[in-house]
Amino acid sequence: MSHTHAQSPDARTQAIVRELATIHEHAGRDHRVGEPGLFSRIMVIVDGNVPSEGDSASCYLTPVKAPRSGEGYYTLTANNGAVRPAEISVDEAKLSQQDSEVATLLDAYDWITEQGLKVATQSLQVILISNIGPCTGCKARLQIFYSDLLSAAAEARSTVAITVESIYNTPEASRDSTRGNAIPTTYGYPSAARTPYNISGNQGAYWLHTLPRPQ
Image (cartoon, rainbow, N blue to C red):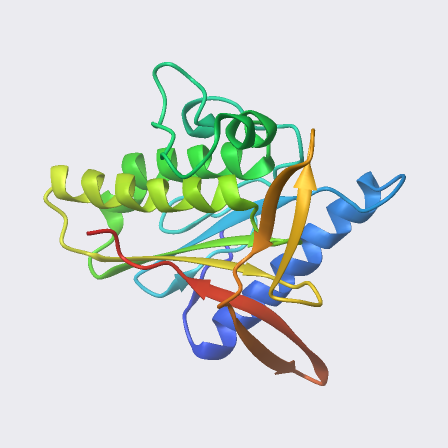
């Protein structure tokens, strides 16, 4: 059943806050020791239509993806997949190749290229929502994904405006850490904007980073 809503600032914010809660619920159920892993999903708002669970005709929510679910094109390690940028080390790519965003990006790309570009007439807002900001490797993957969407739109002769954003709610906009054998990484975007909300007395804030349009 579709529960699509025409976009207003409130409708978009309500959907983002709702999906952040969903993501944290999944992370909480999975959490055993230490910090929970990174869970993610993508919301695709098409021509202002904000999706709810189960929408796939005119807008879309990917399934929530869990840590260690990543595989396929956006691993940056597959021979026939996206090419690893020079600034991403082989170790970083390998350590993050199973991150949830890897699966989320591929799911969103498939829907957008198979359905989204056919139904969109004005805009596609692509929003990665996660409980933790993406690591260094996944930030590179997200930028590659953006380039891939623009290439697909050009091939389809679509002139819709496409934006890609990353939204998460941690105490700080970014956090330096290490993975595996002391490989440095940064979770989140240092330049992300703190975005407060107040929905019927439910107050809080999340971090929002709008990706630069690839050249």
